Image (cartoon, rainbow, N blue to C red; front, top):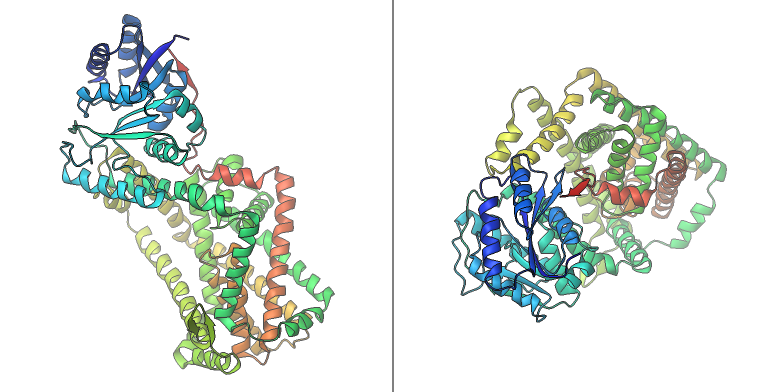
Length: 615
């Protein structure tokens, strides 16, 4: 290793027309203020498809101040920078864009800010009051919006996070690189945010900047890529550190109680709830678990049919295990992260691409919603049209007085009416979504590509539109096929009928006579309870399911609120217990770590680390 003061990295992707001039200008500028032999210029060539590798190799052979770091596959802008920095010999690490959009007269100020030891990180800025920057309207709006969001959510003090003109000390880079997760355009923003959070000295100074060539700022990339990275970093830095086990349990408990307060007021005698639960027949409760277990092979069979129609073979038992694991993940982790786990499992074990994996999940959810809506539809529509929702609201209002929370008074009757209306809206939205997909499936058109490219002409837009088209196309493939639609649809209805039968067995365990009226009500209660779980407001929909279930049973039958609440708890506990036990068995059988699967599933592009070599 050479003892160098400065290493300048030039990230290059298909730069055959400009790379030679860029290297020459960089060497000349560095030589003007640094001693000979104290610096190097590294071209981080990132899986180029043109003559950039050949040109760079020649430059490196002709001048020992030039080095060529090559990657066979795309690492991404951030990945290429980090890979090159790791192999650089300088104590001060510098990079700037190869188009030389930033005036090179600022290079000395950038380098010396860090090399002098005064700062740990330095960055040029196009948004300082005194700077001169030619910003086309499209770039200006996108840049201003992006930097505003970074300052707001990530509490950064900087004005410009994406100016491609930065320097960092070796010490700071080594300390931060293990924490930086992004490998693409958000990489340098994440470095700047983490440097500020960790107490490093960061300098931002004004630079003159003029865009060169086609803009690489893109609406699609900024919205889908950078926006998601801002949210991810905000969660990791501001939310996740506060979510200790104790805090999580307390927050979950509060959420459950609030859901129940909104649903039924929870002012009935809790002792009556416990008495009702203790009086339930344990043998019949166990039988309800066996009944519910029968639905899982049906889920595996349905999922196998969906993937088979998409062109991916699988076995029913493997698919059942994958579903068990993913649903267990949804119970354990927030925001339905278990759905991503299933996409990861079928990709890792059956080579199903992520877009098709998520499409298969979407198809399953669509059919679940349709089945639930069909089961509850007759009762729900009848209630809405005949004013039956008022019957439920009045029954609850008569039993439960208004509840004050945080200075606001909640009317339980109004809450019940709202819950039913929301359930009707979710079911109707599912029907409309499927109708739209069915109609679009009959048209041979690239409407997704046209919609995306209408707001973007960047290569990333083509990638995004391709992923979306594959996703939509996979959904259409199953829904537009009458045979597949019928098989998956009937399978979904049977699955949810078994779910309702499970609840009916629980009612019988509590000594409730099962009549035709009760069967209709339970179909409705289970359906609305599951519709209430559509939004991931609590792990496994705990509290939301119980609240919706209780208000329906209490409002439409002779069953008292405490008993209805007790039944909803037992019904949900039985189903979640079967899910968790099945998930644990499946994890052991398939040798899958749930936490590892969650982490891996966050890599939605499915790109593995590239094998890189250095010239």
